[in-house]
Length: 203
Image (cartoon, rainbow, N blue to C red; front, side, top):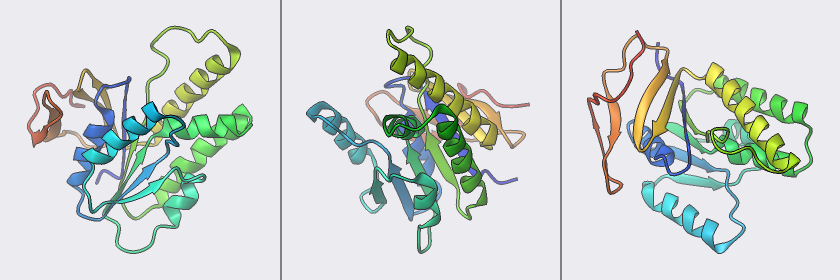
């Protein structure tokens, strides 16, 4: 069974996006990168620029599409694969538009169903936001809960799920019996596709 939908999750600065980029390089030349972050200040723009520099120059990038399912089904031409970075920001945008919790959860389910119908593989990045302190306000707690529920929905739909911790990818779900090759991220930002003794494999 081929891997169609890969979810990459982890905390802040865990190496998620770089890992997703390296996975996407193995899919082919025609990669589409759906960037859901809409930078609102200089510091966030620097973060976006750093992510842009990690990607191949010939990849096509679509910045902060308002409707991810529509963006995915609207892609034209030969597509080797798609990277969505990230689900968490997509949930945040829906929340700030005034959508209800039920509506946001439905939007994530619709996104996952759309991915299942695509003819090309998808790699989705998301954030683990519930492992830190409890947010001090209602909106923060609501966002944390919605992000966690979105991750659960995406993980159920995904064929393969990695969690990144301190730059080390751990495979926690796979539709394949074994994963003989995985990405190992090196210090300094470089990476290499090789057998990785750190990766946990499904049995």
